Image (cartoon, rainbow, N blue to C red; front, top):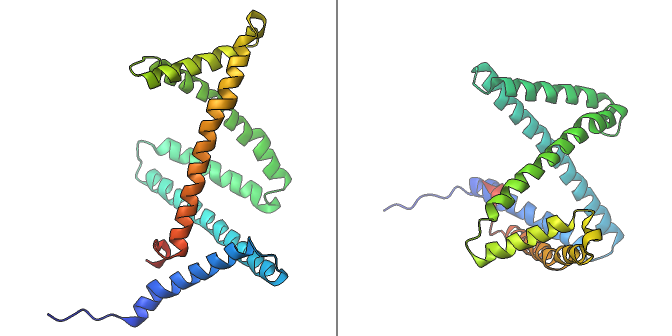
Length: 215
């Protein structure tokens, strides 16, 4: 049976050149974090600036994709059309307001202070009800892990009430212990796992095992 022919030009364009560029840039930036050299620092600075520019264009492409998606909903008169109209109109208004003065201008600061921050505070306030619902479901104890979680949640919730310090100083002390010892240890363990995952992903990209840029 005849073997399929390998197109050298396609192989170079889709595999070797992108992998070589990614490996070279990644290794230069990585070495620049460990070696102090003026020439190397300037090269790393240029590469990082290029990365920021590419990231900005990626955000613009994401915004364009979002606009096209919701514009398609509007043209098709989808059931979610009112929400799409609201999203597209909000994005256009904010974009046109911020574009002349830039991200640090007065218009951008006004949008952040009087629109974005109140919306963010509203969504965070809604989390209280979701957390309360989650605690209620978790209190239906079936295993010892759920019992431990429920006890910890009750201790933290009760210990956060201001007048509990008057009732007994042991309750706020127990709350501080739960927050600063087991909860903090769990958070640090999660962060360590995330860091190891990022390192593993970076090594797979640097060694060419994962090549999302070569397709």
